[in-house]
Image 1 (cartoon, rainbow, N blue to C red):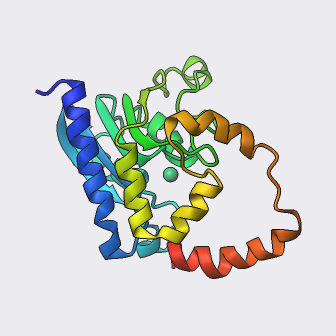
Image 2: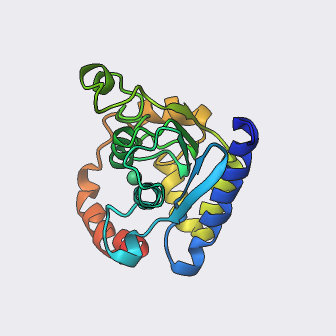
Image 3: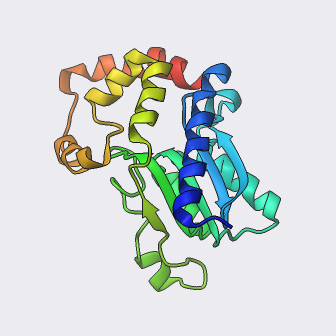
Length: 208
Ligand SMILES: [Zn+2]
């Protein structure tokens, strides 16, 4: 059995390679890998576009696969690897399945289940309902940040510029600044343009 550090390096590289393959299926390069005690359990890309279902984030699909494969709802001794910080929805699923460790690359100050809404390391869940929720998982961020950023940039340079400018996904060291600079951000007169962008550009690009 590999130690955590060696296993993390192998699994995160696998996660980045998987994200690179998203180009073939037209999905955005969100990828997740689940390992148990250093051994691969399962992996998944984002399936939102393929299934026209916004709940099919890579982490959600991987969690469902892992539960089926291990024939268990509880994944205590598993580590989830992800290219991007899990969102609030995925973070809640991580907490309910009691995944013990979460390792990801870029932070998500706008949508993240740790940076924005603290679901991932919230202690209230486990202190009030310890029979359901385990203590928070160990969370490690910033793995292969340059590689993941390059995958997103190569996939769609224009979309990546948009994400970077809005500080949607950031390097760990930028997370605090991004979180504060996004506070109170309003589109004002650009809201109708944003409506158009959602329907015409973003949905077509990401989800349809
Ligand atoms: Zn998610």
